Length: 169
Image 1: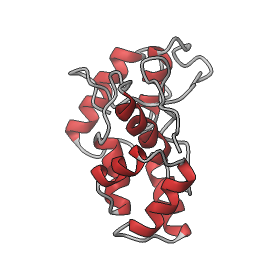
Image 2: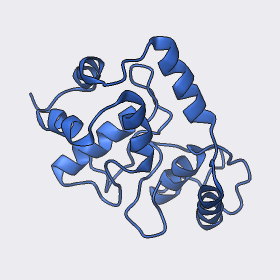
Image 3: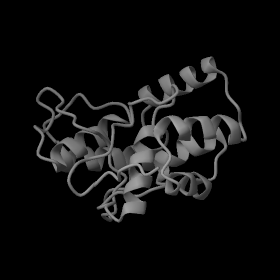
Image 4: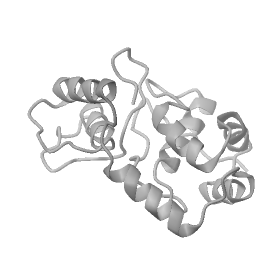
C-alpha cells in the first residue's frame, strides 16, 4: 500500500495542535516524514526540535518511524505501530495531559524566549496574541502559504520546522 506524499512546497503540514491517538505534534511529523521520503519536504525538517518533543515522550527512534512511513503505512497503522514500539508506553490520561501541556507551553528558557520573540517580530510583528510554542509555527505557515497573517488565524496546516537559518521550529 502506498500513502500519497504531502508536498510541503505547496502546502504546510498539519498544525502541531492536530492530534492522532491523542498526541499533538505526531500528525505534523508524519506529514514531514512522508514529504521527506517523497522528495517534497521544502524548507521543513523531519526530526526537528518540535518533533523531538514527541519522540522523547513516546520513546521512539526517528529513523525507525521513518522506515515505517517508507512502507506506505497510514496514520492509523503508524499509531498502532507506535503503541507497540514506544519505549515509554503511555496511558490515555498521560497522553492527554502531555498534549495539553505542549499545546499551552511557551518558551522555557532565555535563549528560546529570545528566538521566539525574534521570530514573532519577523513573521507577524502586528500580532500580539502569540503565547504558546504552537502559535508561532501556525502563524509562520499561514504567512508562508498565503494566509492572512492571523486576522482570524487563517491556519491551513501549521507550524514549520524550517531549513532557513533563522527558523528552526
